[in-house]
Image (tube, rainbow, N blue to C red; front, side):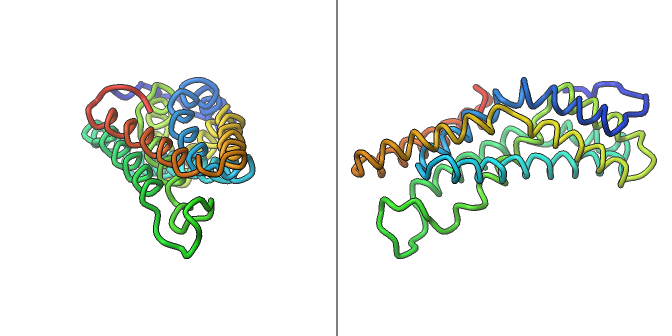
Length: 218
């Protein structure tokens, strides 16, 4: 996607509103399938799913902060480089890796249906980090404005404000509902725990393959 021209100054409040416009619209479409599948598969209830969602959104805020800071530091060079980044492949690999981790978790000395698995704290963060790379008009405007910022710190602050706005997304409510639904299923029928986990893992892998093939949206 070509960078969206934005030659004027962008305030922190404007960057936050720009991010908010993403979080309440485009972001929800890309976040819900990935985090919904993850929360359903873990079946750990609303609080666990909310914690995973916060990590996911922290990854997005981190990604936007780094991108905007890099744009302020490198200027238009970063915008040109970004056109060559294999962002769909990066996200696809992250989705597939997350699904595989759910399907074949590391041994932790716990029963097969347990919700506490080692190594399951990082995927939501890196999924969020990967999704922050996906082009969209508000992000293009942010990077274009950051490229004209006084210094990299100013750009990073703009990116952070944008990320905080984007974090106010319906996924904060939807993912915990998936977690509650998964927990209710596995509590009432413990034998479903394995199949719920595998179904969520398969959904993440399918989303990742769709990204790698250039079709569908995660």
